[in-house]
Length: 343
Image (tube, rainbow, N blue to C red; front, side, top):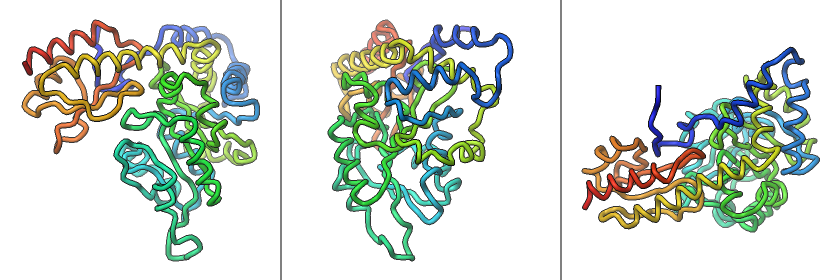
């Protein structure tokens, strides 16, 4: 069976061949379960090389699991997490954070998916008042749900604001590789080097089969996380098969090449679609997502060419996502169809 590549999601893409080869190579003999194996130790070493030697790394199954378990490590049921209204933890995780931590999400409207110190400050109130959930964490997404990117300085000032109020800074890094590729920096520059405390490090959108990592800047913060991970149903028995995927990405620069290619295809798609009559770009294209207005009467016909999501039916805003395996031919074919339909 051969499936056409689409622009619906980078989750729709297949597994990079090097990652699949690594899984197959690990499928030999017996090793200890639950991460007590040399494959997992090697993968942790590669991530520490990018994030810092003190980083505490824990592999989990998926992005929601990473976010929920990471936040559960620092949030109690009467506490709250400040995040953008568009955050994945608010819009696309079915209330998992609130259900499983017992705490609240304090959401903030943003025009581009990015928090600022001023927006964070505006949500910090009722501190010490027993009638109100107590702010405990600030969560930002890198790259954001709108495909925009925080610079290291922008992360740094949010971290300073959070820490000044004794809050932790969590980063949902499902597309952190795309952000790093966009900024031309290493992962540490936009995470722990800029003041992030807890990182959900994405791999699925960057070419692996299944798996993410929860990483803590300070091992002391992760003191009880092994129990949290188990209780969150995120502990894999055959951990080696998750771990070797991260080794395949991070022992060289595959993670960066995959992300850079996806970003380049998004930039090309945005550039070419901006020339199509009736289509208007809605956000800066900094990573691998393109947001655009498409006349409502043409959406279904264009989706039949290559599937994509309607982001907001009220405004006919759509989202196109490119992947590690998107080709220039995919882009040109899609643009040609749009020109035919809308011209």
